[in-house]
Image 1 (cartoon, rainbow, N blue to C red):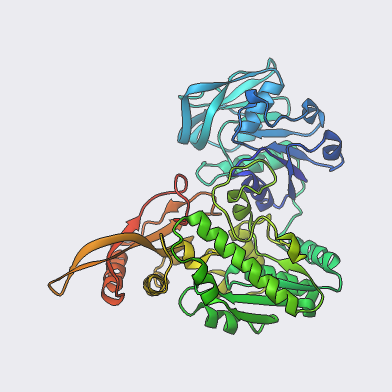
Image 2 (image 1 turned 90 degrees about the vertical axis):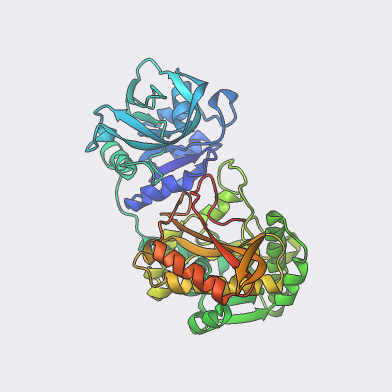
Length: 502
């Protein structure tokens, strides 16, 4: 097992996920874990994550005995700086910071086995190691950062992020650390995850009833299917029609999922929309929608005898962006299924997917034998169109966006590159645009198209959609959707933007 120590990086779980890709089991631990606890884990290697802090501020320190566990250590970004300083080196804030791509030059060490001497990496740091511990050697450098990597006995430090998709040969570097440096055993699999999680849920739930928020998306459906496998007749799925759904979403959910599990449909459209009147702030909208979801479940739970648990399809990117991860991460935006329940609800949360990424959930769906077409559906946010309509949410604006989004998805599904697109959707902007239709002046809404390519949702680049496709979609939307007279394309990556606009 490889232990990943979390110092609050947005990419900590991505490190653990990369390790699991090579069939090596990994777990994430808070940086405050004691050396005794860690020693009892029978670990084969230790990875120190990045983080938002500075090592000279002594925010997230660890015991120096971490380096005496007699296992290889890989420090990434903040983890490298922490290792260097604790072993006798010096870290300082530098005038020349590095964010984004950088060209790196490496030395021939076991960590870089099979790699070229020069390649591109992804940097994200304002501090740098300026002096190494005595026994350490520089193994990588960029023009801006002379010490972009070091080694010292069985300890390695990398200033760049090998875990992100943007770093060339990043996966190879991690695999070299696992196999060549740690000698880790490659025995983990998604089938084993199912076995372990089913047993854990069964043991946790016992003979009690479980309710689950089934949205019709991949995450909640996989979570519900996994839980049903564990508790069978004690599972009750609850689908809430909140009025913020995609075109004919309710009908598709009932047809596809209703035969696989015990499913109740709750109509709550008026309830949700009445709470969103004149609410424009995205965080307020998310919290209102999340609160109403909780209240709906609270009401439904009272109708079901002996309910003790609520299953949620929370993924780790949701946890990270909500600042609720294992380590001290920053809040990017709230997620309605992250952060717990009101005490009065008296239900315990089960989150079987909490440590997984979207692509891992799709793999899990295949193991659970869900339909391929369903597994390949594009992600849809928990708050639905509530966060794809910028500004006030009204029934008229919902109608406009629902029609535009339907057209976009209809045409996108015909593209050869559709499977390579991580997410594609329409956004209704709070802008009026002057147009001309039939020789008449119009002043209608602006629709934005957002399409990105990604591996895990943590980072993303805008998808290069064919011009003919964009032209045709824009024509269909402006011709068929009353209320839109202009279509624009979002070409921003994540970071600096998030995938969703709100």
